[in-house]
Image 1 (spheres, one colour):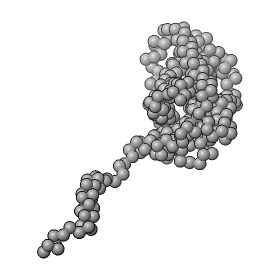
Image 2: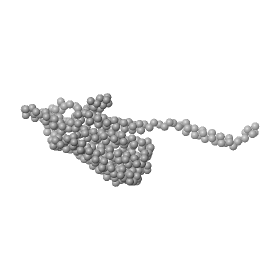
Image 3: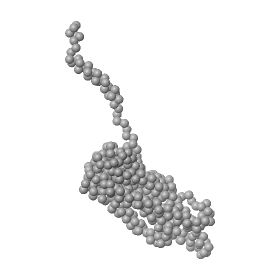
Image 4: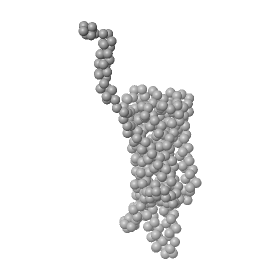
Length: 365
């Protein structure tokens, strides 16, 4: 019996293992399956709606004859840039987020991805800048503009916008291939050349933004001057005008009214011309409101990113960690702007709304 009460060496080890197991049992019991990554699912939804919505815009401008004018051709080209953001830029950014903002792909793809990101963002602001300039010139000199504003010249303007965007973005892959340190910061794929960030942000964003805002203000001012020239017609015509937002510009409306002024009586001819001009002015004001919403949303969604990006380029190594966290958030706010425009067209424009509804039902004619 005494031998049975002897404490054997291996009994100690068994007791220790048992106590260790009990002490770690709560941790083993608390082990749960990996939680669902709802932010990633939300980002996937953003990517889907960005690509699908901009494809609908491209289809609408290509198919609907009512949308065949200079402004909508620019909007179609803008939709191409936004669609490519959703197709090429956003998925790679999502992969980087899943890897805690470290670059999981081959290093050679990093400068190419930054190049595409900057290219499409620059193309977006350049398109909006070109639209504001084009509309201001058209309203300032409607007759001269209507004679020269052909489809061929519109395509040349759009090609010029893309060319400028490519030229401004092209130094990125050149620098990245020559010195990988300029596109990598602690394993994160990001631009690491402060001088290029400062110059590029100024030339590709802030200067076009100022031009866009000034042109939009001058356009609204000239439209107000034109409307005050027809005060009586404006009041009477507003009662019978349709609620649809016309996509025809002032120039197209003016040319169409010239065709309608064929009666032999000069009085009726002048009346038809003035009423046609007032309808054209109303269409321009409505279209300007839609573009104003597009400009405003683009402004508030991309300004935080570019301001933060400039601050990081200025302070460099002395930057707070919060700035880096903010820029990861602000860049996705900017990406979301690529998917917002189709929603704006749907809410404010009946032609786009009807076209989208038909396309979703596979009715293309």
